[in-house]
Length: 532
Image 1 (cartoon, rainbow, N blue to C red):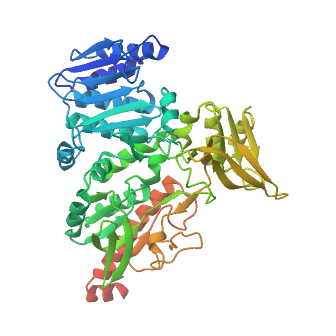
Image 2: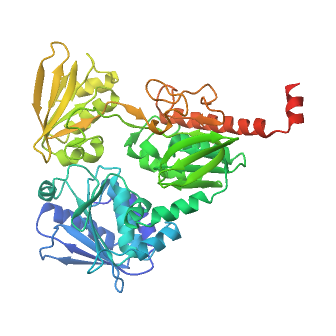
């Protein structure tokens, strides 16, 4: 089942294991059980510290397997075969159960160890529904697996939604990752270990705010941790100036990008992998990364720029680079918010497998929309692509592929006007023919919205000049309308929202900020000589 080179790599990793690992598998006679048995059998042969126990008793999830270590109270289970994006989750779980230390910050590890659930037993029982094609899911699975290894009060079951569809239907899970805690929905979408811990530890926000408020002013403070922000941080830190990055989610929208095939010198990669490499590069320098922090207000005066955060803390800096990026644009029609994650989705790679054999619509005829329709056509029974314009805007090669698929219908000159549902989940949509204004209803189970981006600038209105589209207006140096405040990336008026362009703009903004610092802090006599 595992290719020879993958076995070799895994065997090398398993040499780091320092204590015994016991795999307890719950199996039956189904094909998936046989597939799981084959995978586990191959893993056992790669390390003399791993043993396999097979059980035929009816577990709540079959096939599934638990990982534990004799003498340690660990409750960690995979319900499904963790291949695809989740294979890394399996490898990390094996290492951590086997005693190999995590790279997670020590203060976060101590927070995890101190967590307790509600009375009477204090148990925090997590269940995560994932899909093997979801690039957002591994972060959640890996975070909760680690927490289960570190704290005996925490239990975690990672469940492949495509394998346990009856359970998904019963719980009406229509978006992954979806996390349940003690039977109730805890969260949906990508969450890292720090974010999960912060949500459980109610006192964490106040402690963070106190620490942040005590920080000395920065020379340059970057707001946003996407490609533009990461590039700006590296270029600023290399100048030897005090650099900070405050980000709601380090990596930004790249975390939600499946395939990246146009980043020069890298023929192919994936968003989460690129973000991990970006963060690793930034951390090679003396950059203060403040993650999971949302900026809410910018003020300026007396040569100091202040950023107020959602937790009440404020950060000060001589210069600021705004790189808050953009988010998926919504349709803003009745029913969209009501049925978000109940049939309305924005990530076809993540949520597509949950709609296997069902009817779906894709809204948007650009590259993203057409790519989504092509991907979904291989999973669902039928795809209807709806485009507002009179023609598709995607690249010709994508359009040819789309039109070759037998289970795809394209409707142009159509405006979606409503998402309909039964109160629990989506059951259709209404669109208006822009040619004759007639309205039509489509019966379907899922809607994937792919209609472009919206800049994250609501918090900046009235502070820096914005375009009619809400983008930050910048000049050729990345300077905004406010002295000392620069901007870069998808949040600005710079055209063509691409990773490589955002990185270039972030680098340029950092150089401009450094130049601003030199000119505004230079002694008067030096400035006069320079002017002469």
